[in-house]
Structures are given as structure tokens and as C-alpha cells.
Length: 468
Image (cartoon, rainbow, N blue to C red; front, side, top):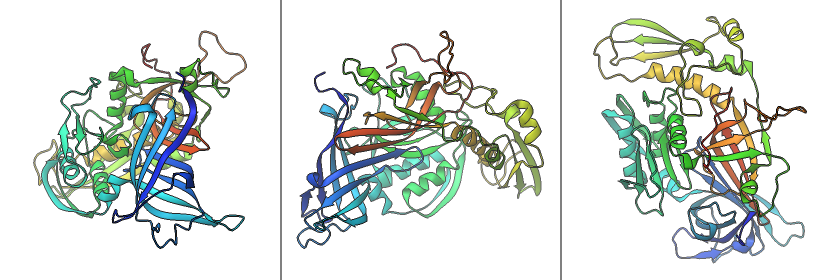
């Protein structure tokens, strides 16, 4: 425990290598800030280095930074939570893509600038293009084929060392040639016929995610994103189930602005948020624009020469998974049912058009069911409710937290008089998905900023004891 220091975070090594691999330079002493950003909303993770350069690396004839260099970054923490390497070390291989914000120092003896970088694997993938037709194949099969060809060779993990349960029949792959990185792939339903015309591989993944459907995931929220630990092509339901069915993954956190840094209380130091902010509590105008409570799809059936209107009502039709992993009908949340029915009407409902040439229950046509109507109606409605329950939180340390992790948060009741038997805020307490993680290393301090999201607004889910 002598090495325990939840606030400590620094870079041990920063090495920049030339494009041809012939020259390299250790710039560890020149870096004064490191930032890393990972998000469920981004197909790659990225970061930046702030550099104080007094040796002229931007003009140096022997070794010149041009925005084409590879980067080896070794980070160190002392909160004893990082599991990827020994002694709290995190190793990152990246590619410098730009040099920005060049500014002369006050004494005129050097310059400061920012090196923006992305993960090495995503940089290599970004140089390629997918130009291929796919006929009568599941979207998940196409994803697997693209990943194997453009990202990494894959081998199935028959049984992971931590006995991880992988829900919904998804597959956990080991990515060949990496240090323990994995790829999670959730299966889809329905056979696609599509042409991917000149997209980069990550763009192709987003293209497929918008066309992926699974009855196990009524939200139709397929996402493709990268973290330091690997890649995911899954839905929010998968991430919630992965957390609740593998109870050791669900850590418990609490919010206390007067966080104790007593080293004899390690869990209090590393599992307490210093800030907990709600950017938007309620936005009725946004709910109306987004189709959060009512939407309508006009299906233009090209083969049968007919048009069908399909309405979707949140109170009557929505049945998404809450953050305990249970599929439930809508509870009373941001708005009362009476207000919803009075405000979100047929006249102001959000409308979409689908041109249909595929099979459904009415009989065969040119191709199998593409589920476009179901995807559009559920994606727009679910996303609106999910992103409107967004929280930003900060914590000291915790380089181990990743987008897609499920955590449990206890938030106190914000009022003078509280009930000792119910001291927590029922709306804000409960399980959250980590949507994004921002890690900032500066002056040997690691600060972590999290964006948290949850679907259900009322009630709170209590995980089993001993889940930390």
C-alpha cells in the first residue's frame, strides 16, 4: 500500500519516431501535459501532448516533427486500479496527426505547441477504403469480415481468464498481435444487401451500425467504438447486461464534494466523485424536435405500390431495458403522462420516410426484412431519452475506467432535511453507463472527467453487495 496515491499520474516515457523509423527522440522532459479521450460515440480514441520546445524540433534538420511521426507513450498511476500493465503502467502506441497552437514563450527562447494523436491501429485503418458489395449477409457477419481484413486478425476467446459472461450470444475475440486487446461483436438479425462505396473502414462500421437490428436490443443502439482495451460493435443493452451479469464489473461510486484523500481509506479516495453536474435536466423543446415521445414512419412499398403509415408512441409502444438489465415499460420520468399526451400530438409528431423493397410478414419481395422502420423509430426515441439523462462527473485518478463500463452511483439527496432511511436521490442514484472518459495528466496529477448516461429516470437499482 506504500505506493498508493490516488491523485498521482504521470508520463514515464514519451518517444517520437520518424515516419521511416530511422530516427527517434525521447521528448519526455519536454512534455508538460497529456490528455486522452475515449468515447462510446467515437470509433477511435485520441489524445494530445503539450510540448515546451527549446531545441527547435519543428525546424531541426536532423529530426523534424512534421505531423507524420509515430508515438510511444508510457503512463504511470498509483491508485492501484489499472490492470493492463505491471505497477500501474499503461502503454499506448499512437500516430501524431497534427501540430497545433504554436506559441512563442515569453522570453523568446522556445515555443509551446500541441501534438494531436490518434491510436496507431485507427491511423493505419484510416488510410484504407472499403469498396465492396455484400449480398444476403447479416450485418454482424459483414462487420467481422471488414474487421479481419482492415483492422486485425481475430481468434475467438473460448473462455476468458476472468470467466466473463458475454450476453446475447455475442463473441469475444482476441486481436492478433496486440497486448491483450479484445473485440466484442454482438450478432444481428436480417440479411443485408448493400454496397459500401469508398468509405474508410470506421465509416463503414457506422454505416452498418445504422442498419443493424437485434430483437435482444429493442433500442437498436448498435455502436462501434474503440478504447485502450480494444473495440466494440454492440448495443447499450449488451453493455448493461455485461455489467449486471458479471457483477464484479459493476463498481460502486458515490458523490461527495469533500472527498477524503486518507490513504487508509482507499475505496473512499478512488470511488468518490468530486463533482457531479447535470447539463440539461429537462428540455421539452428538444423532446418535441427529436421525436422523443411520438414519431411516424411513412413506408413507401415500391414492389406492392402502396404506402403505409406506422405510428410509434412512447407510452404505448416503448419497452426498453432499464439500467438493471430488465426490459420495462416506461415509468413516470421527465414528464407526466398527462402532459405527454397533451403536448406531443399527431400534428407535431416527427416524421420519417422509408422506401421499402424487402420482405416482411406480408410476403416475399426482393430481399429479406431490413427492419428499417423499427430501427428508425426506436433509435430516435431511445437516444433522446438516454442522452437527456446525462451527467458529467470528475474524479481523481482512475485511468482504468473505460467507455461502456457499467457503474453504480450513489447520489445524496440535495436538501436540508433528509430521511435517514432514504438518504439518496432516487432519480440520480443507480446504474450508469460510462459514455466518455477524459484523462488529464499535469504536474504529476491525474484528473478524470466522465460523461455518464442512464435510460431510466425514476427509481434506483441496488447492485449486490461486494461488487467493488
